[in-house]
Amino acid sequence: MHRVLPLKVHYYGTPVVLVSSANPDGTTNVAPMSSAWWLGQHAVLGLAASSRTTQNMLRTGEAVLNLASADLVGHVDRLALLSGSPELSPHKRDTGYRYEPRKFEVAGLTPEPSDLIAPDRVVECPIQLECHVSSHYPIDPDSPGALAIHVRVLRAHVDDAVRLPGSDHIDPKAWDPLIMKFCDFFGDSQPLIPSRLAAGWRMPGRLGDRRSCARSS
Image (cartoon, rainbow, N blue to C red; front, side, top):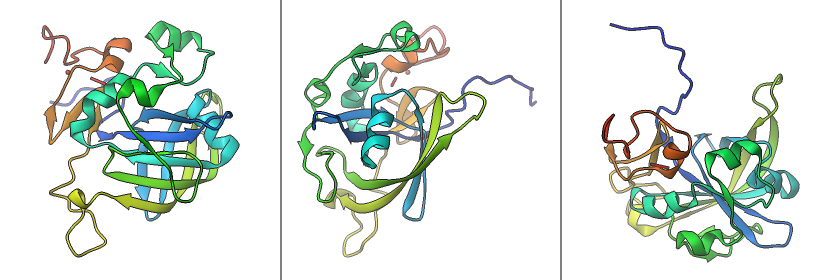
């Protein structure tokens, strides 16, 4: 039986992307997100207009989309409630975010210079896409707090471990993306670890709440 529900969250399952962008001081900010999809050599990202990542991307026109594999879930989770901006919105403060300028170090990730743009790539991510910002616009004109940002892929870096041998393609059997599903982490369709983001957002049925269900971000 189907029921009509006033759903508040529509995170049905999308890949986790670590977006690296150049800060005004030349350092690289890295932040997780999962509102992303691709078509051809283009991607569309959904980001908060006030975030450091968004501000960096719109100022420089550059970003690296580092696609995280499921085995990086612990590293990604350590980034979940960190902000690259010293000025936090009331919503972020209430959710449990804190300012952290050393995100790579805190998450146990390694920066690596990009070929064509300023922000560093994330060594541990098997797929790294250097991108140029093409355009952006408010997702809801009546509430401009979130933006849709269009980017064009300039160069793709692919680890041999997920490359289809002898080709220019990803091996779908070797590539196990980290998936964000309703603020929790999944890999190979299985729940992984309890998510800090799910806890911060007070998501019902999260993995960390065994009374409801057995889940992260």
